[in-house]
Image 1: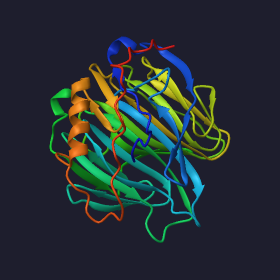
Image 2: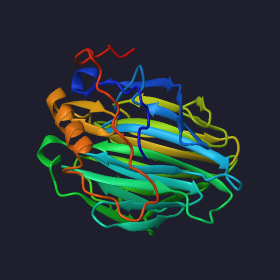
Image 3: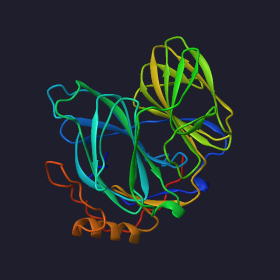
Image 4: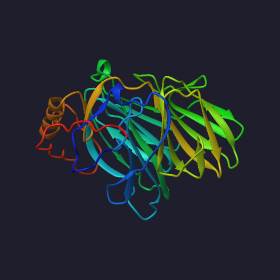
Length: 321
C-alpha cells in the first residue's frame, strides 16, 4: 500500500534520543486518510507524538469495509526505497504486482513482505471478483543503512508459526516471539505478531526489556496493560517491559509491534525512506523520469505521479510528548 497523500512532508524520524526508556501507556489517535475511491485508512505512524516503534516506521489500519459493490483497494503503481512493506489481512484479498515480476494474491493471515532495498515499484488491488469485506493493516519497516541498498525482492508466506495459550493465538508475522520465529527476512531485531483473543481471556505475553513496543487494535474490546484500546487506535508502551498483560472483553484482534530502538535518523517523504533530503530529491527525479524503479507489468492504469517536494527544507523534529 502507498502513502497517497499529495501534501506529503519531509519528515525526520528515528534516533534513540526520542525513545522512551521506561514503560509508558501513550494512546495514539489515528489520522484519517483517503486511499482511492472506496478505502479510508487510519494512520497511526508516523504520528504527531510518535514517529517510530523500533524499525516500524509506518502503520495504516483499514476496514472492515463492505466493498461488495465497490472496486475495493485500487493503488496504482508507485515507488518505494529504503524500507520493507508488510501486508496483513483479517478479511479480503489483495493482488500484489511489482517491478521484479512478482504476482501474488495475499489472503487473511498470510505474510506479504516486499523489501524495496535500493528501488522497487508495485501496485495493489482487490481482485475481480473479490470478497465482500476488506480489513487489514499496512506497515513499513525501515531498513538500516547497511542494508538499505539491497536488491529488491518479494516474499509470500502462507503458513506462519503460532504461539498459543488459553484464549490466545499469536501468529508471528516477523521476528521471534516466545521461541517461535517467522520465516520472513528481517534486518533489525524486531517483532510483529497478530493476537487473536477470545472473550473473557486474561493472559500475558513475554516481552524483551530492551525492545520498545506498541499494540494496534484491529477489532473487538480489549485492555492492554489495563488501558482500553479501541479498534483503529494504538497504545505505545515504551521500553523496559518483561511481560504484557492482556484482557479481552469480547473476541478481539490486536497487533503487537516492537523492536530495538532504531538508532539512525531517517528522512521519510511519500513512499521513500532515505538519509538526507538529497536522497529524496534523487528518488523523485528517478521516478519522474521513469528510471531506477522498474515497471509494473499487467496493471490496468497509469502509475502514480510523485508529489511536489516542499519549498522549505526539512522540518526540525518535534519533541515527543
